[in-house]
Image 1 (cartoon, rainbow over the protein chains, first blue to last red):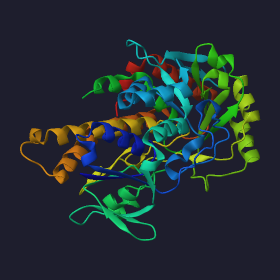
Image 2: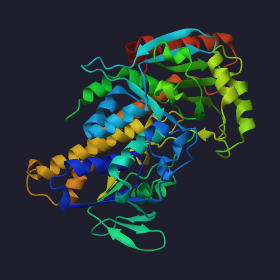
Image 3: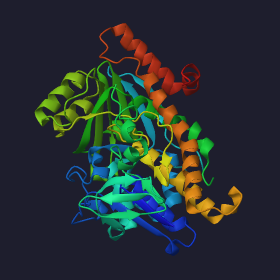
Image 4: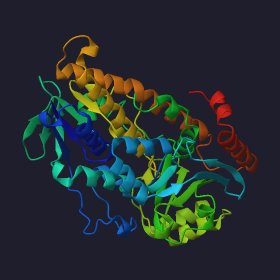
Length: 204
Length: 250
């Protein structure tokens, strides 16, 4: 089976990692990742020296670099399920946030809730920059498995779905995975003019 | 399934945190600062969410505490779509002071003094899509359901989609006979993508409609009684999530 993953963000990279581990006879399949922009290699990727305040915006899929995420306990367990090394490096770089504290502007405490899942070897929410999660995934997948090509169209009318690249060229596959984020080329192919109509992004 | 779906569904912590953070018609701004982690965080290893009449403000440690990196975010309701994502730093700080400058928590004021962000993000969402697949193509993560906000819970949903999809795909590729007969890769893709939608779409939809329920106001609250009703409402949501669920089923 030939699979094309469009987008090397969190969902694209996590999907690649799992396919590599789970697909029966992985080497008999072809799995390609296309990312529109070249990920910026940090000269010093040592996690202890990584400072999110200094990192620049990366690719389109990772451009929400300025954001904090709280990965809840059940998702932290998902990381362990996806890859033990991924889980370890993610936990090492984040902060174990054991509670959510809710307050009012006037200073009253409304609630303090545990983020723990009360299971054996309890997991809690891990807080960190979204970039951390992406970087952990990127390091395990390996940059050599990501091709820097911008997919500008997806054609679904043929026998096999195919992608077209900026500057020409095409490639077909048995399966195209649209992990290409907010302004998805695959979503546009699925819904055509309705992608700009009833299925366009909403801002109320 | 290798992980327990019903456990995920019942995780009230998760649902609540999302409910409090996300809604449509909101803007967000956020970033990181290098600063010693305050006791407000370290005392109970907390992520701190503060709600007020002009929006919400949150902060937490974003790395092991010895690294001294704090993440913060501010969300507020706006009647109109902002024109661009970028303003300037001074403008940004001034807006933050207007919204949160009089708030009680000194940590919030010190973050506003030290922050150096100039980007404001409108919070967009994707309307519920009727399906996430067609002729051998499937959507995952933000492409299928954008839950965009400054505190990025979208990453959580992206991971879940990916795990669900890969479990289904490898299952049917190993055992195509469980679908009744020998299947080609197109049929497998179709079944897998349909399964993904059936499992994940109700979860995403639920999170979004709950988010809308929490933000009862679309504008700044100016009436103190309304402000206290809002606090009481959040108090109920956070302390008795089951009651909240009962009154606000989507």
